[in-house]
Image 1 (cartoon, rainbow, N blue to C red):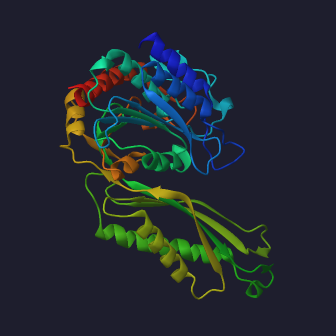
Image 2 (spheres, rainbow, N blue to C red):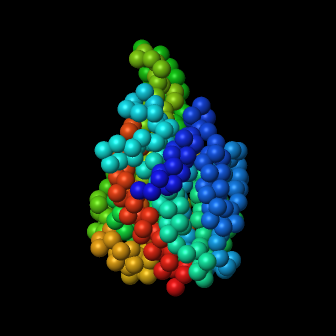
Image 3 (cartoon, rainbow, N blue to C red):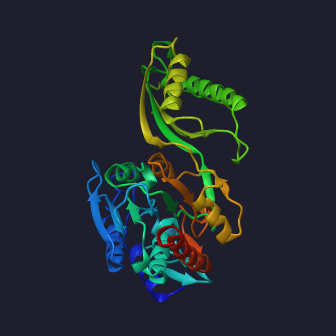
Length: 382
């Protein structure tokens, strides 16, 4: 891997850019965004930082090289933010790129700051004077806890014809993934002393009924719908958090449940959320409780680009790999919703992210750099 690309990646890793629902952990991504914009300007791009509406200190980077034609050319897209981390759990400083055993270690190095290093390297390989169709590079904010950056950028900037989202896939071309949403359900009951529970209404027992009803409804849905291109083939639902009560001798008047739901193509977040609310309310209709709903993740729709689409087919040719699907989510649905054919492909593996000692193979980054250059030449120069 060339030294300039590694030096640029080291700069991005050093730029702390945590996204979190916890205000104590959340930080601005401006430093990382400015580094990406500066790199792009150095290659002749018109690059601009835009603060995401409603998220102070969170910035998208929009950039263009070549003619400003909507619906044409290629988009290279990624996010600059990371998840929170515990520095004490790392073998090296998470904000310092460490190269050892053929791998690059650092916070966000794999997910997905390495992609911007690949873009930088690819731009150095391409004769940019030969650009005939628009080449856009977008770097988004808050992918890790809401995807507001991607939601905003498709409203602000013209779309391309093709889009490469550089999430880590071990260089396997990915053409589809499930959608996802997350909901918080709060149940309010009535407290009472445990010596006479009949004087209260247990929010915990009500939430248990909600959970049972949601599980039953979800299993019925899975029996009716599956898609063999995914593993697992069904939509999934996970109860990620449930908390209630304050003491063993008090009837709990408050309970909270966090629900993660993944969607198959053909399902829509709004309809799934509405059904979840209906099932939950029906489950406790005979109890004196109140349910409140609020989105933890507003939702991203499933994405499915035909495997025969030119960008997917070309990536298969470059890698020698059959295009596949993945179970995790990306910002690709926002770009697909804007009319783009989307390929998801990048160095590193999802198995190595969101954990201490996040890393990626340097050899994969080198290959991704070369393939990104060829993709630019194929869809913007020829």
